Image: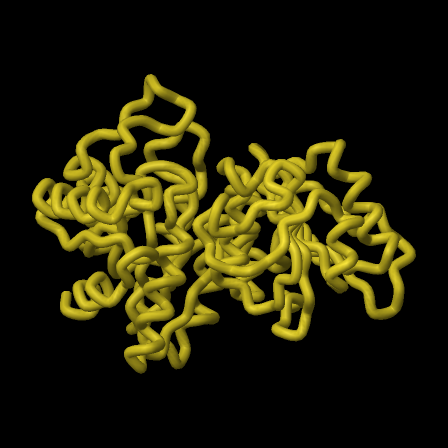
Length: 347
C-alpha cells in the first residue's frame, strides 16, 4: 500500500455535517493525528466558526462552506473526512468532489464507493487513493501470530465509534516516547490515512478477514517490542462483524476496553443495553481466548471516553469505573496514556 499523505501534502478535508455530528470521525481524527499539512476544512454547517468552538480542537484552520472556497487556501489534496452509515458516498456530495478533482486536486477516499474509475484522465502528478480495497494474496487465518514474542495489544469497545483508534494511537505515541519499539496497526480507513498503511478490514471478505490481520501482524512484528492494533466494531453491536477476526488474526497478548462514559445502550438502538463493564470484560476475555484454546487473554485496563464531560465529571467517571472493575482507567486523549501503558508493561 502506497502512503500518499506525506508531510509535504497540503490537504483540504471534506467534512460536511461531520464536525458537530458523529459522521466526521475520519476527518477529525486526521486533524488530530495526520502527518500532512491541513490547510482548510469544508463544512457548510460550521463555516465561519473555529475548530475549537465546534470540535474542541485548538488549531487555527479556516472552516469554509465549499470546495471552491477551500481552493483559495491552495490545497493539492482533497480528503473525504465523512464516514456516513455503510461507508456509501452521498450523491449530493459527488458533484463537489468532482469539482475538486477536475481543478487538479488529488483525492483520498475512505468510503466503500471506489472513485478512481470516475476519473480516467488525471494529470501526471495527480492521484486517487481508494483506501477500502481488499488486499491481494489473502489466506485463511491459522493463529500464526500466537508464537510471536512481541506484545500485541488490541483495543475492543462497548460500541462502535467510542475511541478505539485514538486509544491505540495515544498508547503507541507514549510507547515511542518511552523508547519502546512500537507500531500502530491500522485496520480502518481513518487509521490507514494516518499510518499510511494497514488493512481496511471491512473491505475484506469475511473468510479472509482473520488471515488479512494475521498477515499484517506477522509483517509488523519484526524489530518491534509492542504492537497496538486498532479495534473495530463491538461484540455487543448486532451489525458488527469485525471484532472476532481481529482477535483471531492478531492473537492479542492483552486487551484495552474502550467505553464512552455514561453510555448505557448501543447508539441508536435503545433496546440493546450495554451490560455492566465487569460482564463485558468477561465476554471479551472468554472470546479472545476461545475458552482457553488460544491461552489466557486479559483486559489490561479501561480507556474511558470523557470528551462530553467537564474535567471534574471526567475524573469522577474514571474513579467510578476503576471502583466498578478493579482495573486501571483513564481518558488517554484527555489525561495521557502513560498510566495505561505502565499497566500494560508491568503485567
